[in-house]
Image (cartoon, rainbow, N blue to C red; front, side, top):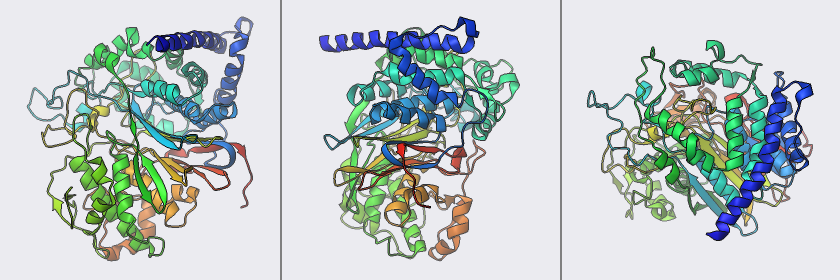
Length: 636
């Protein structure tokens, strides 16, 4: 305990020094030239770095066009946002490792992707340590408050469940105890080389100086305009003048800059205790709604005690062997690792590389349907539910599930879950609750020059979270608890329980070959995250695509439903190939967004020579950015 106290005090002293320089820089961004206060020498390097990575987004002019794919050496970062990827690469360039760069990139995404991520949410962090050859994980999922009743989603006035929209998605009752800051702190403490104050520096300046609004940011704001307008504090921040910020304008968030600077000084305690914690709890318990709004906004039960009690869970990763590769993912409370792993184990029985494309895609859809059936029957928070992770990831179980697949004909769906003790093709009946995960979230992938790697998926749940900001703090609160099943069923592994983590589909994935990192991949997209990661791996490993091609390829997402939602490009390309199998494709889309896209992946590949390819989306969600420390030209 004494060593921990000494370490924390040393960190705090260093943080105060860095924060002093940051405060000076923040003053400089708004003061006249004659009043500029210069940072002291120890902070100059960090502040100069921050200024370099934010300069292109601080002027109101369009930022440089995103580079979806880069190839080279020395480290790589892939994310949905150009500014965030530049922050991460600069941390690598200055000697930081993958964990340092991942936290710095995530913090920047909280600035430029505030509707998808930020300190008001949570996520899952998967880390590969090249020196030991081990893969570790941090579960930073939001938790239900200790006082949350199992009928929290039932309207006491009617005795009926609240409607998912508009009641639940924009409410205090949907807000879980955030885990993002605790995740960053744990990741840096266990794996990193930098202090939290140092890796937050670029994001503090980015929030203060601003970034250039693109079409994606404006469209996401417009998609949420009615919700945001119901909460004056949110409207003030994201609807200046009553409308979404214009494309090409500069969006500044000085309140978030001050909040991050406070955290740089005091560490996560500034968030999980004290005044800020009290403000968070007050917003949840008493949503600050416009009196003229008809939005119900049911109150929640989150307290300062819930915030003070929050802790991450460090646990082993899931693991399956696929085509001689070691595939590691996130264990429950996320369903990502088990569901991706089970589907891969099923596909292991089939030579997809030699099959016709229609046959391969048919098997992909059938394997996914069965993995989702088992996800619904067995997956929940293992602190509350006996999750049969080992069985679900066993090849024997996958073989039993595979024998229920007709290689020539689509199954009648939904298919039943597999029997855990099956020795043949047995299934079990289970009434699966409706899936309410939304399409938001964000993902980043990092590899450093030493071969360490991070796959990190973080979220505030749906685009715009709960739509509630903490007044004067600059960030949105999550609505993660909507991932629980709405109606309490004692047999449902995802039922509401106090202190519980709701089931997630986030699937940060690291793939090793002979002990070295080969692929790092993940995506946003609610339950479609699982199928996005699965399809990218299949595209790259089995279907002969390069990583950029695998990321850009059109997608379909079979989640144990009668029809398969698919992007228009997928339907155009493969409907004729899948029709003979009886597979029915329907256009993808979501009631909360103007986009009909599936996922927004960020991936990295490292070949046998150490050449890194950072591949992000070229189009989806406005296009992402993959960067490397030392680029090399590749032949066209």
